[in-house]
Length: 67
Image 1 (cartoon, helix red, strand yellow):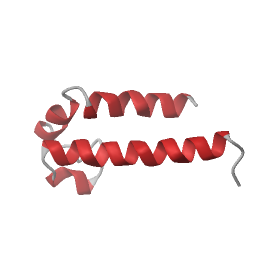
Image 2 (cartoon, rainbow, N blue to C red; image 1 turned 90 degrees about the vertical axis):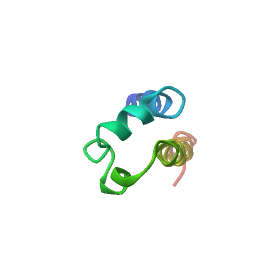
Image 3 (cartoon, rainbow, N blue to C red; image 1 turned 45 degrees about the vertical axis):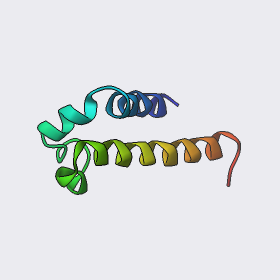
Image 4 (cartoon, rainbow, N blue to C red; image 1 turned 60 degrees about the vertical axis):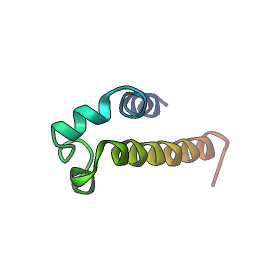
């Protein structure tokens, strides 16, 4: 639960605040992965947003007693 909340705070910073600008300027390679190093600011927001939604679905599946 705590890890999901920390990841959610990171995602809010990237998607809604100016975190994508910071990551794009300071090479997101070290924070995200090699794929994100060549992305623009909008593409970073999209990438993090999609991964956030996927993590939320996995989190709900586990919390609701999934397999």
